[in-house]
Amino acid sequence: MPDKKRILIVDDESDIRQLLSDFLGANGYFPVAASDGKTALTMVKEETIGTALIDLNLPDMNGLEVMREIKKQDAGISCIIITGLASKLSAIEAINIGAYGYIQKPFDFQQLLLMISRGIEKQEALEALQRKITEMNSFINNIPDMAWLKDTDSRYIAANKAFCTSVGMDLELLINNTCEVCFDKEVAEKLQEDDRKVMQSKAQMIFEEKIVDSLNNEVWLETIKSPILDKSGKVTGTVGIARNITDRVLAEQETKKAKEEAEAANQAKSKFLANMSHELRTPLNHIIGFTELVIDKSFGELNEVQEEYLDDVLHSSRHLLSLVNDILDLSKVEAGKLKLEATTVNLKVVLENSLTMIKEKAIKHSIQLASAIDNIPETIMADERKLKQVMYNLLSNAVKFTPDGGEISLTAGLSNGSMTFADDIVAKASGQKSSGIDHEPKASQKFIQISVADTGIGLKQEDLERIFLPFKQVDSSINRKYQGTGLGLSLTKSLVELHGGTIRAESKGEGKGSTFRFTIPL
Image 1 (cartoon, rainbow, N blue to C red):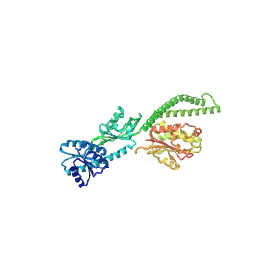
Image 2: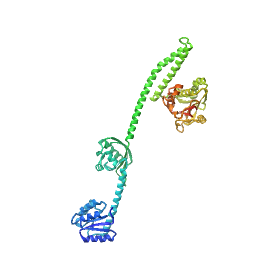
Image 3: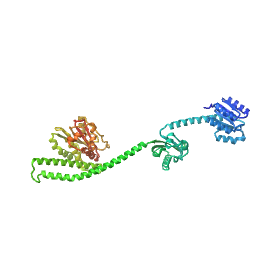
Image 4: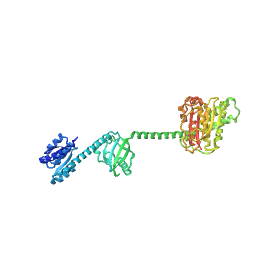
């Protein structure tokens, strides 16, 4: 570190050396003197010099040459040239190659003091700037992300190690060149176009950019580019920071590909199921029709064994037809081909008829039926056939999974998307927990909320959402005991959602019953 107060006087005239030494010493400086260039350079090696006053005309070396050598040894030394009138042009040349200034003989000592002081201040400012640059470079070079500065022509002014390593180029080769030196033409044009957008907008922008790195790998970057503005607001360049997001992009591409493949497979499956269902329905309807004719004794009398066997055939055929119809409807839903045929529907009649459809089976198993469906509008807009299908699926499930002597209740009422007064009573009494998320309607939106509650086998908390998936039942033993495919609730959910509603299941646990509630907007 130079001693700012120590001044080296380089002049071959002893009286000049003495004059300057006396004056500078009297003004708080510590002068040392050399009569030639070689001596001066030796002293620079041995002393900590702050300023060098150098005469242009030395006996062994040119003053400009001495200054160059001093700057090579210690760039922090401020150099001032001593010149006569005849060598003023050489003094100006000295300034061009790094001298702070020059002073002519005879000396203006106040000017000399001012020049020395300002030279020291400038050198201190340069040293402070260099420290900041060093600190900044250290900071930037330790950033794992790529970082760089460019001028308005997209030429690199600076770049960190991460950038140089990625592009496989030394910083010295990169500086003052555009990105065409390290990227192919197409990539370079894209990067430069992004630079222009940032400079034109004078705003920070984020880009996804693809480059080829030094290992010939395609690399995706998330790049933040910002304009560099001077005090007047003029754009002087751009600064960029880029993060390698290749793993994320590849993962997104794989996810997209997998999704597209899954959608294609799902469409193929739905098409197959639809074709299969159509092919099965015709022979099944024939089987059912002819079986009914035989049971009705259209072809003659039957004994008890024959009637029993034919009842089994009819029951199994109807069950299979119901399954085929469910598969067909579900495949239409998945293909987006199942449409609503909305009409004015008397909701109370639909609900009462739904109870009537399961009444015989409920009586057979001593299951009590209860309903609270009076506080509802007389009519709503809905697809009547699909609404009946929803109600039949929920009520028939309730009968299927409720043991003899149990209870089933049907409630309906107005709702704003959350629980109605009737459902609130049921939930508080049973302590049931809910799956799903309450619908969040507009403030003015009203809903009909319908609930089917039973005292049947109940559900585990982890099964409350699974049961709405296609071909899913809570466990295989239930499938064997109660006979089913797991399509009913999946189709029910799809039909409710087609109406713009939501459905959820609630249960306190196994053996403690369950409640299914759904909403339909008015």
